Image 1: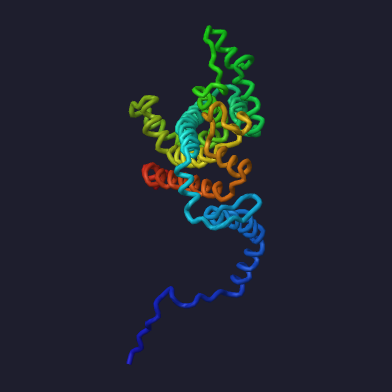
Image 2 (image 1 turned 45 degrees about the vertical axis):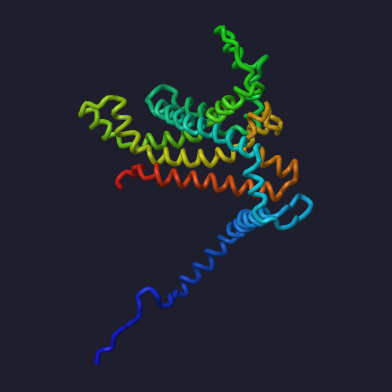
Length: 310
């Protein structure tokens, strides 16, 4: 009588050799500092933030359990909606403009011109300047009295605005500052442009394609992974926008709350009002918003990305 083997493949107990066990042990040992750091400095704060968001905790007291009261108060807070609106406004302008500027610079710096290495360094330097120093420099650049921007506008007979002291011009000034520091994104775009196969450009020229046609049908498809990366990271960074506006406005969102972004309002609730529970709920809402935007981008734009050879 033939015996039938009823063992389901893949469900049996996996047996590791002595060498494999040794590799796993040593691998975990060498990774233990990173694992410990992730648990202590990332996982634990996230868990504590979630826990605190349901309490009335302050800097000095653990508080009592409130349920979803912090979230209810957050969604009825007019300043929360204003800070979120300011954040979305800056993000909606700075991210696309930053991508366009970085892409344009990458295309220009890919040309075979004399001294292009110097130009690449000059355009990259702003991205490595500390954010606090950047904010201080731009504060003086946008000065209504002696700032270089209004001085240059005055040379052509234009009276410059008050910029950082005018509610109508404060956010455009912050957008200009954000676009100014796209040097790191420019380097990524430049690497993507240089990866486009040269033979495709040559074939397109033979077929009679012009400059714009070659850019649309050759450059953009190969650059789409880099553009997706720039879009997703720009959205995430936009919801965390804080340092420049904090330094320039002394942390109060002046003038008239026009620069009160979400990160700054979160900072005020935590370190000025000591409302740990409320600030924790705010932080979780921002995280959910940024994660949702990233998922939407991947589900929509991500499907149109072309990966060479796939």
